[in-house]
Length: 312
Image (cartoon, rainbow, N blue to C red):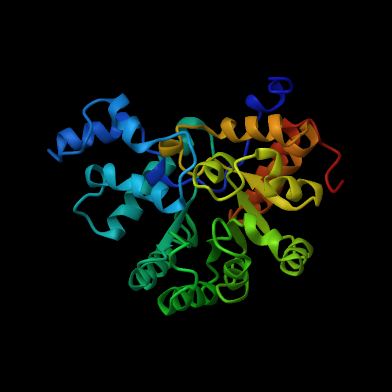
């Protein structure tokens, strides 16, 4: 693909990728066998055939894919143990692959009774790999955040815990407005349908709200028009919105981060300059501590041969 070379081997910042949507199929099969848990697949290809797909479905159908393999992964340990073990893994991965990796703990729209426990875990591990709280799940079924979610996010604000919210993926702009005004989101997961409310969209543009866009995911969940030349991210590009690109759930989408950049380059006119802007946006909108964030931004400027152009 013309222009592909400029982004394939360049460093990128990914803000929106779900750990439970990123397992290697080999890992799932290994633990299913080790723990003697029956899942409807014995080989990598069989597992991929039931967990992944390549034609648009609904967000509800996309989320249903997780039920095929989560029994093999979800262990009989406490939520506290899960966070601790994930943090250990991220720290090891940072050293092994020379990357920065941080975790965000997700509340689920259909489980508001969990949310206060989630924010307590955010508080406990706030200075130990965990950087934020999120609200995820099927917004097509739960348009309004339940009181449990609201209380958790109020506590997050009080304790200085960063906040991002899945909103406007398949739901209307009102869900985005609630995320910003009620849950005090600092970033929006997806947010494509924000543009259907011009007043809200302009407000968020002016406030430099960050949109975590996931192009291939938005196609397969039916979140947007299947014609990528009509995707809301094109509007984000034109308006110089603060957005980035992420892979969301590579296992189920059978994709990598480059899949999203391929789409953006082929159908949306992603230029090299826009690629750089998008990733610097992502770094500046990350929830890293300020010193580490500044280091990351400087690394990108060097990698992109932009030293001396900061602020332009």
